[in-house]
Length: 153
Image 1 (tube, rainbow, N blue to C red):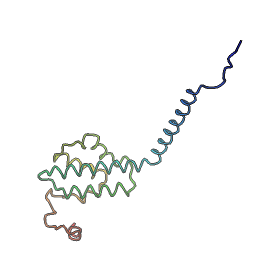
Image 2 (cartoon, one colour):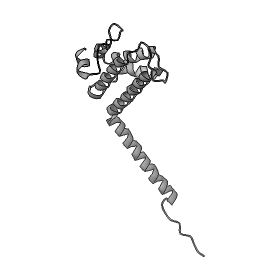
Image 3 (cartoon, helix red, strand yellow):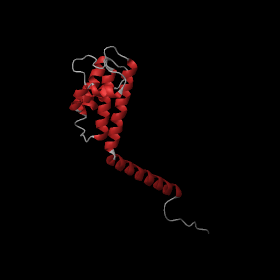
Image 4 (tube, rainbow, N blue to C red):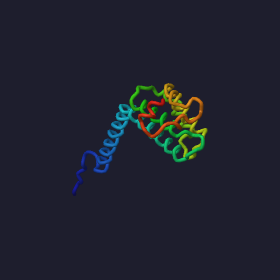
């Protein structure tokens, strides 16, 4: 009579499943820690992508009455502040609300451009200085020379 000797321990399939589960758990924990530590960089990247995308849409739309130079100037200053300045998420809520409310759809009109500019200015009020105060294009007298455009502000 031959008796089968039963092995003690887990089967191979169960052992492999535990190892794979452990590796996935460690990766998820590492990802969570990375997101917590780098959240400001991720947020800055997301804001930059949103602004660049909206700038492209506005430029391609070529809407009458919209000063794309003003839009680009304010957007570039906004990006510079997002990249270098210390800000709170509360300060950027107007811009986040603009994005959440569908401001980043593929259809651009003058109301969306105004909302885009207002969201950036509400987030950083000192950007107001880059807006055309009378609603007209104050860039008509300028040339493409950077020195001339900086002097005329």
